Image 1 (cartoon, rainbow over the protein chains, first blue to last red):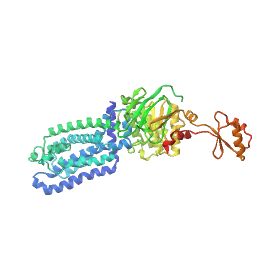
Image 2 (cartoon, helix red, strand yellow):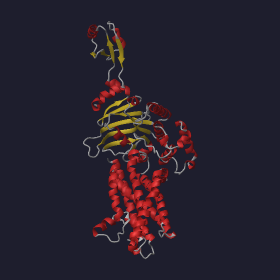
Image 3 (tube, each protein chain N blue to C red):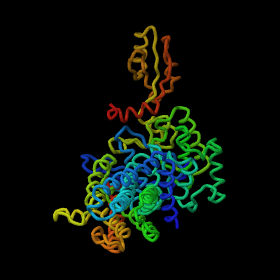
Length: 259
Length: 316
């Protein structure tokens, strides 16, 4: 019970911080407009007809996955800076398990990311992305899983990086290639053979494909857009999350105490 | 408060060598701190103070050696150690995005004092009473519900100490707690810590650069290059390292010098004469002199003199 209380309080701190950060809130509103509104609209006009399917829907699912995954991962990595400069020193000397701290942080940053998904959904509705009520209801838990995977990925990256400066330099290198390998803006149904293994180990590929599996379910273009069925995507995401969280936390704590 | 003769901190042969370092940051350090004692760890930069306090508070693993806090092993049973200690870090660890009350609530829940509730008004009455008392103690009143970024540095430090004491720790670690505070805030903080010591048996473990802060400790441990170079009460350290001497001068210096030599007194000429007392009382020395004196004063060594003598080389 004590650990559960600690997890909830660590998580609620992140959400409280978001609600008090006006700049971040404004950015949250602008970000989906740039990607879904501008990029999706442009691609739909130029490539949508040639591709033969709704490209705004394709971009929406990609941007939704990217937003949730990236935001949760970056939130976790901020723990590196936090532990050097402010409040997380207080968390790390409290008598609660390291796993509770990291899991609380995963929950909190997932909550923050989910909040950022709201304007993405609103814009998708405004641009008439074909989201039916059952699809919308299925996308909500799928979004939660995407956040968890992003946060887990953040824990794994954090466990091998020991300074905020290194994090700022390394994180773009492990994230940006995934935008293309996971097919955020570009179809990856066909890839050159040498990119296939890189695409398969890109965690972001699976939540994005899960969203597309749900959005395009029962539509004629399903087989041209979706790579794996939703249950397979979910299973891979679950396995990756468990692996990232357990080993990531273990390495992080080990690195922290065995300097 | 007189310390009770039971060690609450036991450090044995502690060694820490950081990865890629060519020497030990802490090199075979051993000491004990008794329950209720005010213990100060002094040393120049790089002496190993922060490394030692990090190991004692379980945030850093030692290379070898043993640390027991309240009987619990800092390496094997770190959670039990963390439950018994409060820590005030060198850098403030208050969350500036939260209010004073939210910071306090966060701490209280992490230490298992109260269950999680998202809002202050949902917290148990006992907690709300405690917060109201704390706000009164700090002179904050309703301002405790305002963001911490609107509080002064001294007030934030006090809030940290109050928060650090909420779970009634047996040991309060203070890692250079007054760094960056103005003189008035420092004074106020130490007055408050005095009250804490008088009201409870909290053991205080301090690292500081300010010698006047260490001078009021029960015992001082001086570290240099990772080793304990002196350990004792401020009086013992001063007595052991420095002698008292009398500073005298006269218009007729030749006569005074001759007289000092005749009496067999040890002295140095550094402008005025410095006559080592070496067991004599100042009165005996003065009484034995006939030369008319133009300067007369007793030099009592300060802890700073003793400290500089011990680590003088390292500070240069």
